[in-house]
Length: 546
Image (cartoon, rainbow, N blue to C red; front, side):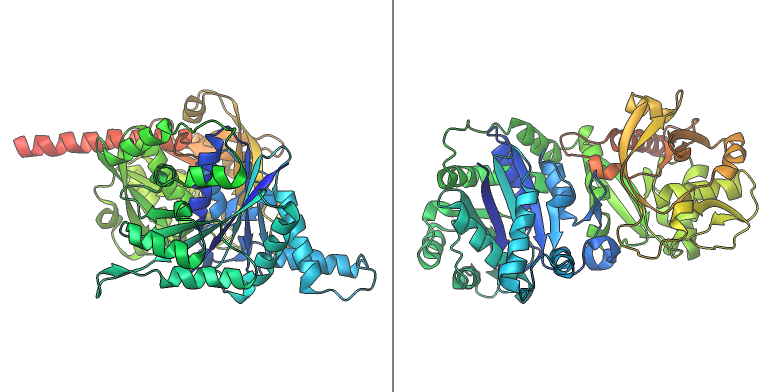
């Protein structure tokens, strides 16, 4: 029988429930248990696919093509839990399902209400999210205890846990212990109030995980235990990490969360977890051999979470070589009016990520041109690859009017064009080319050397494609096609073979990178950037000696 852990949050949003949930999965997997993870989001959007990255951060795409919350990325990077379309449900998706059932007459004329119909549908979604054969299903509830929009989800998990029976469900509540500089102390009252909100609707947390800047005292632990009705050994400190979020599983293991979960779910039959690989990872982050600087030129650069998986994958690639990555975040629009050398001078690599729309495109193209002409390792992803194609078509292949029809539907030479099946699409959500598609790696390419195989499965999220009408002209000018989606003859990757790394891919490799298993494209890109940084250092030393 599958057992369930429900992770809730209190006091304020953005406490790190997703990272904590991922860390819990690590602890349980290290005990030999099969884990599934799911997030229930209280917003009314059916999924985050139509939400602005400034509003919500990146949209994380699953293998089966679901557009989901960015926390799915944390889940996949930390654990081996299978993440799919059932791993993320929203208020919008729940209500849409209930309304469709009502329209079909499935409720037999009954009045459809939040209780029981909405809460029953939430529980059905929880059952779908718990994969077959799962030992432990971890369910994160988005939002904050006390929010109006979270109430149906909290009531649903209360009912669900009651049905499961004692010992088969565990409530983990993440709260904040704020530090007041004026008084020089941390305060427990917000945690007490948050737990009070949960208890009002019938949920008594079994374990409290307390985010804090400074270590808790034993007196604070005792006070929280007394007023929140939680055993002292189940009040777990989650202190802000010094180096990387990948320290969190180690910290929570040291603080006793592993033992607390074992106690509440009766998991004493499982073996003790060995996190030596995570400890080695922490050491790598703490003591890097060098620092490599990567410029990320994007449209949504002001919000770090808009390119969350990109930044994490770059960090994975760097730490694989025992180096640390430093980001130079550049708004693409700035590259239009300013000299790219001023903005990009001194970087060791350039990454241009995905995006939509005309804004910032010309800046990306200028940045790519400068990097190509100065032999800077360059990596383009999705819209970034398309910008590389446009730049090369204009400045090397000499294709007059080269552009993308996304920015200019009437352009003279649409080297990037809308997919035929997308021309009649009106709805924006869930209608792109989404999820994993096979890519045939062409022989004798840099891409083949990097992957070491001739077929890969990578995730997509886009509408526009490389236009095959210009493929022969671009290849003749030196821009090689390196990967093909054979079913449609679509170009998935382009490269310059005479460079250490100048490669663009239509897919999103950042969705498949993990700290312990970096994606080979990111690992190789960082290797080229590190080599370039060493060349820069040698040139600087020669100038000094001269």
